[in-house]
Image 1: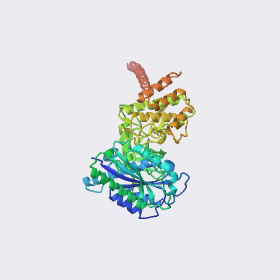
Image 2: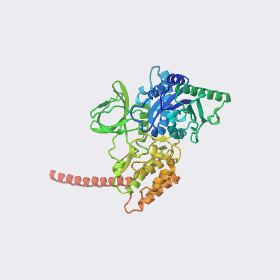
Image 3: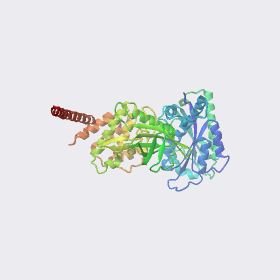
Image 4: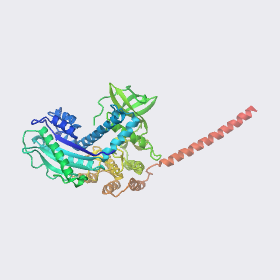
Length: 245
Length: 304
């Protein structure tokens, strides 16, 4: 069995969307297009109690078939790689569950298999997770309240690249930020296999008070499909040869 | 990522859906990455039982336990006992059962002991790693939380991070992870574990651990410089970071040389102890045979 190419959007935010279309609906659309949406809500280390404005985080990830987590800034690195890997396994498991239903002809998931067989299936899932090609579009909310968290975000992304590049399968990352007054989102890093050297990527920042999470997600989805078109036109197979756009 | 949100009270019965074995909860032992571990009892025998929500991760651990309960005749980690599902309140929780290893947490064991124990424990770890590496795997998430000392021997109790050489490390903890400190990748090779061993040695003098700060490598070097460890150990740690040791064997030998310089012999070889035990048994059997023979003769005499 071949793992193929998995596509994910990783949304990093600290607040509720307040502009444009419903991000939950856009996430559902993304899922339908074969792109998983993961959301990480980033809290200040001093923040206590129930996080305000982050109720949306779980709803977006659920609709997007992905994983969500609300986390303190200092744990961001660990969380980013955990969420990405978990979403990857979740997607692969979803595919395998479908196959199982084909084979067994009934609604059966991996969890419902007897332990013996389950043990064999999880090994296959694990193998696919190790070897599949992964494309992660990181979408960073860089509205005013996120500014002081951006250095941590940068570190976490470098760490994510370190974790994923230890896999046998290839990876591609790109980083976008929002809001952007003209195009909703701005590309900060073009598609690359390494996120280690990202000097000054968050220097020019807009400080508008609005958070258009929905429109930003939709733009991210467009960026994915544009990438697929570029790939088809060039007929490129090896993702390392791709230069982006 | 989500841990089961139930706290099992003592006396709770866990019945397997498939195998129908019944386990009685005694008390909670601890929490792992994907589940909670309870001390359980079945037919008067104590076991460690891990229950979680994420079936696939638990199954991967079971596969590893089965594989490494015995590697080339050497026991690496607790023995596997059972795997099953537990249905409670219409929810299914996967669980597995393993041998209960009774021991002290690593940090508790080292409290008040001389610094040479740090070297001895590191050597014991390296001996086990030698076997694991030889069979094509690295331990991955090597950390004090995953270690127990039983009968003065360090044992690992959580094999969730064991990864085939050449693959991405399955589970790690930043403090022990060479990637976090800028000393290499997160791809599994034997040196990944050697780095973690040096961090366990560091932790014995920095029990609260420490963060990477702005320059991870420099932070680590400074911490080593001011660590109240014997200078010979510090030298070995620094050499390990520089990539001098290419295998657990090489690092173990270097540590062995340091330890052998001291007055006491560092470590009782386990093979030797088995042999002495065996020869003692042999003597016992011999003596009893002679005694029995005498009794036999006297009984024979009486009969006559």
